[in-house]
Length: 124
Image 1 (cartoon, rainbow, N blue to C red):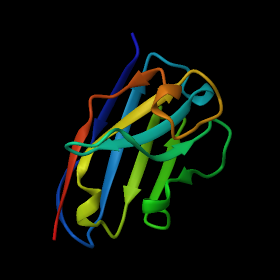
Image 2 (image 1 turned 120 degrees about the vertical axis):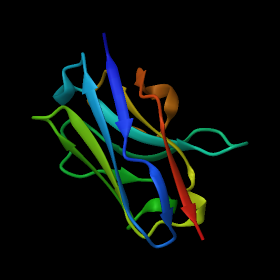
Image 3 (image 1 turned 30 degrees about the vertical axis):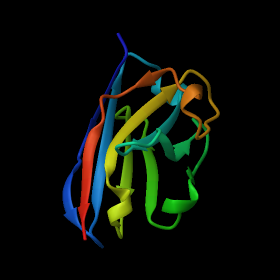
Image 4 (image 1 turned 90 degrees about the vertical axis):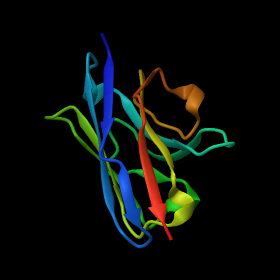
């Protein structure tokens, strides 16, 4: 059974930082592309950051470039999202996702497995 368990969300003031984690099981982690998405009320699911299985660094949506960093620890089958200089518009439920392919994109339909989401709330 494939499981993705996201954690690390919470309430933080604007300008603060959080690190999200996504622990995976049931997949050959180093062969999967990984992405982070977010969804706020009334909006669709938005791609935030993604990383192919063989990339040395991630790629990012424009609103988070320079502030968020995606990393993966293949030994722990875990992916992280370090979020710095948080803004109120970053408030959302954040989801991690895994794709049964090496390359990654910011399109939700690309991904096969999803975590349950973790709430991030940034107060201004």
